Image (tube, rainbow, N blue to C red; front, side):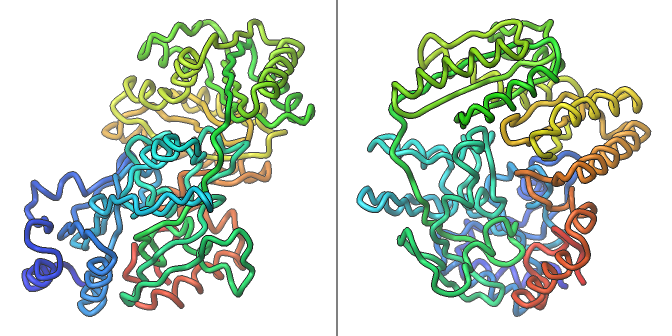
Length: 463
């Protein structure tokens, strides 16, 4: 593979104009890393296309010159998926930010990939509709990035993840061909479901330039509650009891003791700092159902050992309580110079065991680890508070992560529930998938991208 050179840059300027091509070192620095700690690499050039045609022309140029291409949105990824290769071309799609159509008759929304995720839900809200996926970065992440990473969020337990809302995508293939996959039909079983191949493909198979999303009627009511526990086991038992009662809440989130303390210090929300776990519960839907489910959940929380259960008095207070969970990463990031936000998922029945295991790992390796996550779907975020300049400590972090991954897989879990594989998790992927599934993925990559130019080295090393 080749690096960007002067002739290549001049050709780029012919495609997108000189103002939308960056090549100076100081201009490239912000595009040399994403939200993942301790990963960075300087690209050769960054371009900002406005249309699918411009993306296709850039990809054709890169293919002809054998220059690797890394696609990027807002750079909020947490697995190194948009970290560039040295000297590569970065296609940054943030200027492709047009919301093309909100179709109330078919309950769909079509947008360019650079539209901010929260802006999609805000547009829906104006007409009484709802886009449920809500990654923690939704105020700054782009919808194209969400689709490429198959992002999750706090509402995943009830509403699912990004994949569940993608009805179609426009994608530029590695040879520069643009094609649209999918349609507005609720039912469509014609041929392979090709759009699903690209959801979660992390830019390794094609570049997503437009998305067609399913949207829903907005819930008429919502109620938020907080339960406090003196043990993680009691919190996990409450979750099991809620699911066993055939209640599927909108949100079931938790924060451990360290995370609660950091959040309270950061946001001054009024959380008690002497508890082992805080569980955030939220139900939404018809007002009568919301009241009934909220009462049931509060009763189940008390019956399973909650020392205190409180309900938000109104929507404003509910948003304040929810902010406790949404502020977790920001709060923890203030403690040490480097914050490594990990992402593992286990069956819900194994949650208490996994949280206990993470705490034990932290003690044995003398590390600070705050754990929070989506208790309702088993997705945990053990967050290492460390310093990447302390090489000895970073070795302990690596050893601890190895143990956490081993235990996760032993319990039937996955090495990533929502952040993706990228660079950070690719060393674990074969271990989880097994030889057959792993090689099948590489076969698909080789078939679609025989030159290996799209986001090379992400998910797995080149064959």
